[in-house]
Length: 177
Image (cartoon, rainbow, N blue to C red; front, side):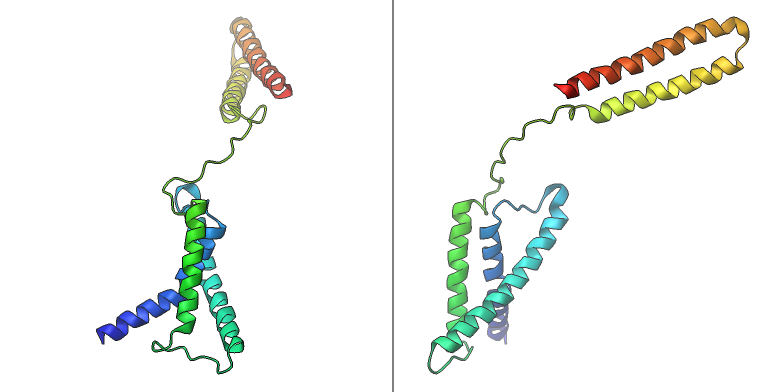
């Protein structure tokens, strides 16, 4: 029974996992299951593994059936299909190895030129938002303050508006470069 179970597991792996996994890794050597896209990559890799393996079983089986006069039987005593799939898996593994699919670190991506105005955009939005809140607070204070305190509020309001305009114009100049 244990030998039968081991044969069954080996056969299922050889039919439905190994050929598809090695072919997928050979075609997409840059895919790694880590980082922000780990779940997406694992789903893609698993789906392609099963789909490509099933397609290879059908295509190789069809080729062997029509390529030989007597056909074939998928048995352990005559493992023609399993041998063909193992050879495909070994060849795809070699291609994947050469392309760097099994390295720990992903292949280096081409450096991307920074887009003008991209750096610090979130920080600028946060600063402008804080300046807008300060402006609203000062406008409210101006409406509710006695006449004697309004000149100070007006001066501070002018400073806040000038700072917001300065930050926007700096960003526009940086983006225009």
